[in-house]
Length: 310
Image (tube, rainbow, N blue to C red):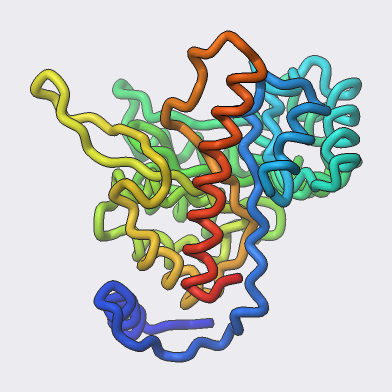
């Protein structure tokens, strides 16, 4: 669906003010938005217990960490990724996506990780980050990143898996959003695109994030949900992560904008605020973790229903 800039901003303003919304082409029934848990937050559990816990909480699937210090170590991917996926499947869930550290096609684990994941039917993976270097001009950094994206796109096509680059706040490529669009705009979105993170977009874009979202709309394959607020400590402003709905992310405007732009993608729910990491007792840690995850999952589903996305 194509919106003019004037209509887009007018529609967004109406959502923020609570006014009636203009009907859009896509119907609510067409939005599925499966919600998966980022397995980073359940890495204290083995594959079977992780999958069973995710199922008990009420998730639709798992965003599996396949990276150094992840649930699946890249050097063991051919042996362990099938085990992890089987455990998730046996729990009645789906491995919608995985999170990797692969940020170039020459990575020694790129081929085995992507080949194994593609054979197992994992559709999406999060690419590793690229950082800006203070010593290198931005234009040169983007030229280097363009080559990385082109080469990874070819590898993704070969193994039938979609690479998704997450916009991350601070000195990362993709943080301003415009640079990520420059890297993607000449590539077809079939096998490469964006894992859009509204928390990071809000940190860097404040009220300007809708324009970046509009730019990337055809390339967004997966979404990340988390929340934050600015916190002053020892005279310095910093970011403090928090449960969703308790921070600064304008989820009402965000979900309305997703609907207006026709964006429909799996959601990876993150829990970057402290939950129970300090607890040594695994059973107690699991109990506290499940309580926090259930709360955020319920909040998210309520928001999606209120926005008529599910």
